[in-house]
Amino acid sequence: MTPVRPTWRSTVLRGAISSLLGVLARRTLSGVENIPRQGPCLLVFNQMSLFDTPLLSVLVPRRDVTGLVARDYRRNPVYRLLVECGGGMWIRRATGDRAALEAGLAALKRGWVVGISPEGRRSRTGGLVQGKPGPAFLARRSGAPIVPVAFVDTDKLAAAWRRFNRPTIEIRVGEPFRLPGPGGGSRKQHRRDDTDRIMCHIAALLPPRYRGVYAEHPYLSTRSAEG
Image 1 (cartoon, one colour):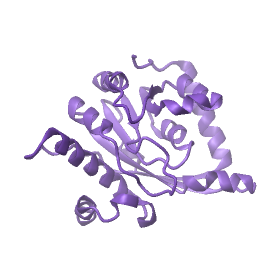
Image 2 (image 1 turned 60 degrees about the vertical axis):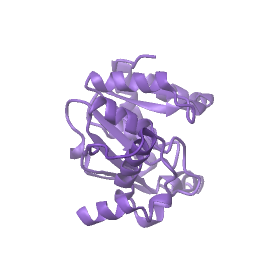
Image 3 (image 1 turned 90 degrees about the vertical axis):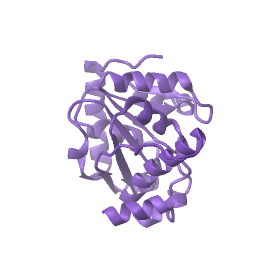
């Protein structure tokens, strides 16, 4: 598996998605200046709806953007078209899909932006669920800065549209960060610590009701103190 080079088709598609989503929902966006204008960047985000990944793809002010998307969603023909025409790549969740991670790493080494949800699936409650180690692997192996992104109220989109309402959603982009040097302990523990740090950076951008299993995490307290 290799990352797909951005084309005029993917640029046109992203523009069409942005226009459509602009009609269907009001968007409040903050912190987009935190996304580097050049060089590699790992975007990590919470996932509450099918629309989060398309939203992420259109908010990045660059063409060299790709993302790792759970392979389960290929069964939806519309979503598959959006992902594949937009330059995304599929990843098998809960299996340690090494080929997909290596493709993401290759994209980062080329200086691209790579998006991935550490949760690996949509949250059924809206609150954060336990993160997976894939993003930590990519961050450590590439050395790329990590930029956290928080989606707020995208879990309410479908219900609002069924009532023919135009809802308001919020997208918050945090400051870039890098993982600290590993301390003592096993490799497995290091990967868990790295994952928790990434998740707590996302949690710090979210309202308390969306922080889920990370609501009381010590790393979140550290982030709150820094903010």
